[in-house]
Length: 149
Image (cartoon, rainbow, N blue to C red; front, side, top):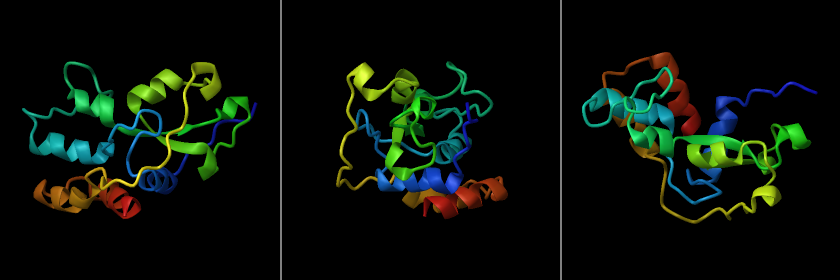
């Protein structure tokens, strides 16, 4: 079996933007993890962020439940295209975990249509948050800021 290719950050961001940062399975609003990391640095007591493995009880539950991931509608392990935008959707972490490598038919789910909502996943605040936080990890955040557009 072919090895699963990594999705570039640019492709992941394109999927998130297209989907308006909404989970295409449950409709939940998502916030890119790098933005939540900055919030954790700015407000460590109110919004703790533990970056190594998002340990429960240490990391704020919003990080665990509202981080967006890219899901393959038809799993690559079942013949779905690994990198085609038509097979990629934004999923919140809980939905991505539940769906795993199942087909939508198998679990009785549908892909929600892209909604016309005014939600940007807080990306409009990203640059300002990064600057207020003292511009930490510039090589990391500058790439995310660029790709999230």
